[in-house]
Image (cartoon, rainbow, N blue to C red):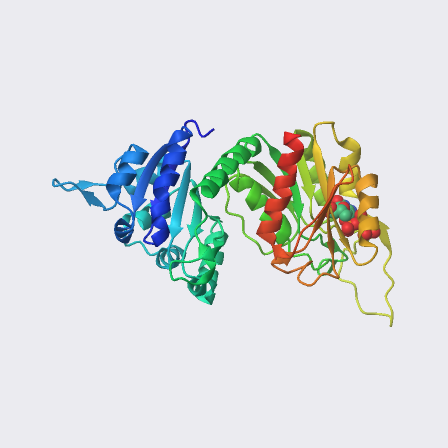
Length: 400
Ligand code: CTP
């Protein structure tokens, strides 16, 4: 199950730390190699001897170990791991991770780790709900870390609410799913379009739209962080990409975007077209700036090629093609029509009538409609969560 996987388990000082003994045991039983780092205060909640016995490795706590002043190499620990799971994550360690503070071995390892980092916050409900905690969680997510949300239930304070660390079996299942999914995704090459297109009228003006590109970029980050190779063809936008697995191709017009997509689609297993491509472009682009001569100006526009539809005609049997539909009325009927006409495996519908969905927002609310008619309606979520839902659907198609 987890044969040969290297899991670094970071434990900070919360009462939930006692559950990590069972978690370490589950990982080892499933064939994983486990190394443990404790923060100094975590020792008050779970003993190093217990964890060393169950993980079958010495436990790391301090930078200096033993009587001879031997140094614990945090860089090596971070490079060794396939996954760094920090559970439980206290508000204190969370705050330090968000700020880049590095006053213990766990934090130094976090800053130097190159593998995926996943955290499981555990604290009292009011601490968890506090604006600063939520802001720090958002910051960690923005750094590319995964966050396993706490459960609701009885807390150490005796209060009821959200803040309980998930049970060892739940954390174990999360890790197992993560490795299964990354194994599938690491074999995939994905073509993605994102952002608007700009159709030039003259050297200073263009016809564009309000697309920010956030949804497409969230998808690119999600896919890359799970091992896929991503070719991101994007129209003008303000977003930076950090992941080395994302090959970014910046374009301006619908014609440029089409050209880039046609060049890369044949080598890709999956294509997700999220760009808001202009449907019409000026018939003539003026060489010089258009002067304001008359009281009206008539522009003649010609249709652009529908990139998604074109890829639908070129699609091979094993390729997966996914499109978006942004609608204002007759949403499902319009999305179904696009699904059929463009030969898609599934379409992601968002309606401009849903609050918090559409251009510019950090959130989105979507319905995914598969070609077999299966329909899944999701609630309003952060765009990176929507990206995960979309990736889950791709994995399900590949698994089927
Ligand atoms: N699309 C595309 N090329 C175009 C137009 C659209 O690749 N020239 C893709 C979009 O990226 C999206 C899907 O087609 O994945 C649907 O786009 P949308 O704008 O909702 O619909 P259109 O097909 O353009 O139809 P309409 O504007 O009439 O709703």
